[in-house]
Image 1: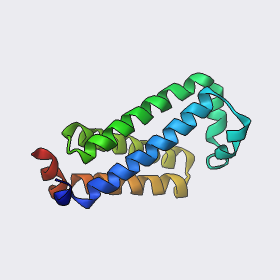
Image 2 (image 1 turned 90 degrees about the vertical axis):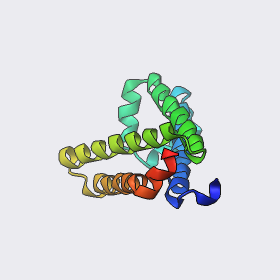
Image 3 (image 1 turned 120 degrees about the vertical axis):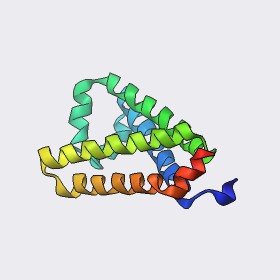
Image 4 (image 1 turned 135 degrees about the horizontal axis):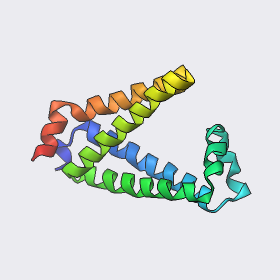
Length: 136
């Protein structure tokens, strides 16, 4: 079955696994603050005060997101249609958030690249060969 899997499926699956790792690390860091992990907030320093303002509870939805992306990544590779839908919805929501960021924050580099990346994933998952792969 893996031999007829479109490359886009493997690429999106790998991205979902990377998102899982990020969500778990950030979520755990928020739930269990540790000065040794503070270096990671240098990647996105604007997010740190927003997450901290929400308190430790902000880590819970990130852990839930990590569980979702892990399950979707595994089942996307297992040819489960729900995982295809999950990925499509996830990238659509992410792209919409980046459009809002582009309009509100005028952060062309970060939000603009986010819109392009989300669009690329949606395009790759929406191609005929990929849709047919999941319709079986």
